[in-house]
Length: 229
Ligand code: ATP
Image (tube, rainbow, N blue to C red; front, side, top):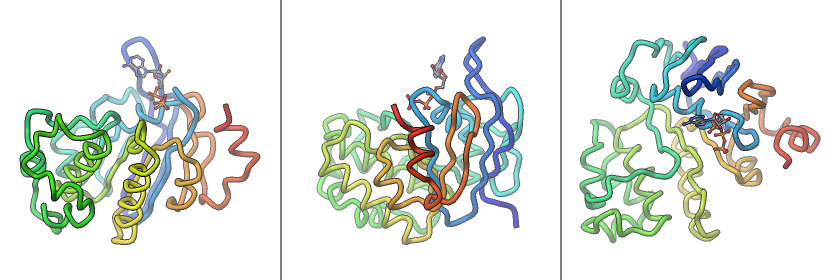
């Protein structure tokens, strides 16, 4: 069977600025994989490439065996990539319920199940999303991605800028999703939380994958070398 996600030596950039110089990554269905590396090393750029928001200049990305190079952004979503982008990006004028409904695609995830995962959303279904707290917006962004019934959930800095207690609620949600068997690719700054939830890690260094392996093999030496400031 094809891996769920297979990235081979991709390159990409922003106009004349090259950001990725050869990123490779492979993940199987049911895994939680952390994409790690210091600021500016190419994590968000890699995620943009996976969702087709940014074109590749080289290399290949396959989702469930299918090369996504010629697919549109919605086609990649239909293939099963559910992106929770950095900065959340809820549809501000819409209510919580509307944000969820517009994303819905057939599958086991519906509004009721999203509310079970994040009960706070259940209390705010009629509230305009612009007026939600940062943590609630993040829950909504995750809920919206789940409503598309993704095979692969991609979380870019889902806990950034949130109070510790709210961060915990997001991590509880991520752990619950893992327990339900969802495949998750995530970027986050909390090494401790990543180590507790991820199966594997891929570390980027200056736009290249520098290390990949089981999370338990990520030694203090490696994290000093690639993640320390
Ligand atoms: P961070 O943890 O700070 O979000 P990152 O690992 O996600 O970092 P990227 O955002 O992918 O890194 O950035 C990789 C490189 O691409 C950096 O050198 C960055 O300056 C550059 N870059 C990112 N976005 C743009 C853009 N819109 N235009 C030009 N260069 C960009």
